[in-house]
Amino acid sequence: MAEDRLAAATDALCAVLRGEAVDWPPAGDADFYRALTEQAAYHGVDALACHLLKNTPAWDALPAAAREALLLRVRQYGAIELVRRHDLETLLGALQRAGVGVLLLKGAALAYTLYPEPHLRARVDTDLFIDTADIGPIKRVFAQRGYDLVGRTYKSHQFNSLRRDLGHGSINYDVHWRASNRALYARVIGFEEALRESLALPGLPWARALPPPLALLQACMHRAANPEHDPNRLVWLYDLHLLASHMDAAQWQSFAQRAVAENLQAICRDALEAARARFATALPQAAQAVLASPPRTEGPLQRRLLSSPLGLVLDDLRELPDLRARAALLREYLAPPGAYLLARYGKSGRAWLPWLYLRYLGTGLLARLTLR
Image (cartoon, rainbow, N blue to C red; front, side, top):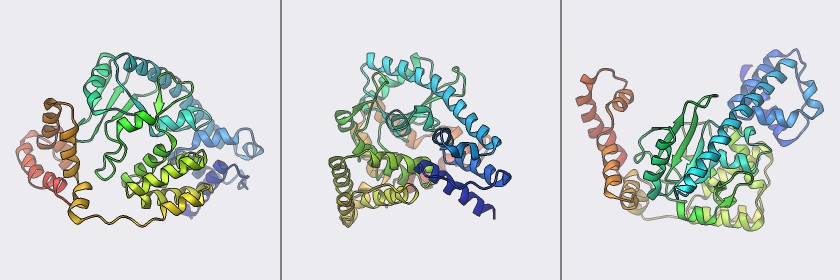
């Protein structure tokens, strides 16, 4: 019964996001409306649903508790966005003066281009895409501005930059030098190509983002590359819906042809079908015909190398800008911090570290770097 109520609440949210009328249960059905607000938060669409409902007759049909819960999220996101946007504008100006090229990725970019207001696209961080040559320079800019740097830059192909002194929680930038952390998708979109084709973001000085075909391809890859996350969270499917709904025929053709060229048509079809199932997303027949192309069969060794972590490590060593960066990459693979190993294997006390290093090098590392 609880699952039925969650499903009904999710269906109602989808109808709201599609702009359709909703036949709300009686106001006394507290369990349904509790499920509605919980699902809206889980799916990352609470503020957006509130925005879409507020000026419709359906808003008055909601119980006061549900309206207040949704309004509270809008106010919270709005306050965070004021701080986040000011910090982002200041940071982008500093990076511009330092000669560091940067693109906004994922939710942050879409928030400023496709959503009615940026705070209506829920997100916990701002994703940035940089060139490998700018890893050192951007870290220096962050350090000079008082950010804490977190993460293994080279092994994970990204790092976090945090500020905890601005109120409303951390200001969190997720800085990527690969388009994805997964070996299969990491090299699909290169920074130079992305920057060359990038578009300026309206109302946000110095900000640029991927063009729609690449943004849609990146969104499909992101959904497929994170199996530990729910691939059907409405916020991600709605991103796909908005991107698909704003592309013209030429952009659709570019997207579909690129997906086939990269042998990613299957994950793109799956992502777009999931969006269509929830939001009736219109998918042009011409693009669907291209995406229906069968997957390309590659030689066993070539396919295994391209999709393996080992292949990506070899590419990383070629592309990183200097010996110091290459040495740091090898160090992160071969000698990770003790705290990381203790957490990874669920141990406490440094006496475990010699055994854990042997275990890591003998099993975990070899498994990750073996051709699959």
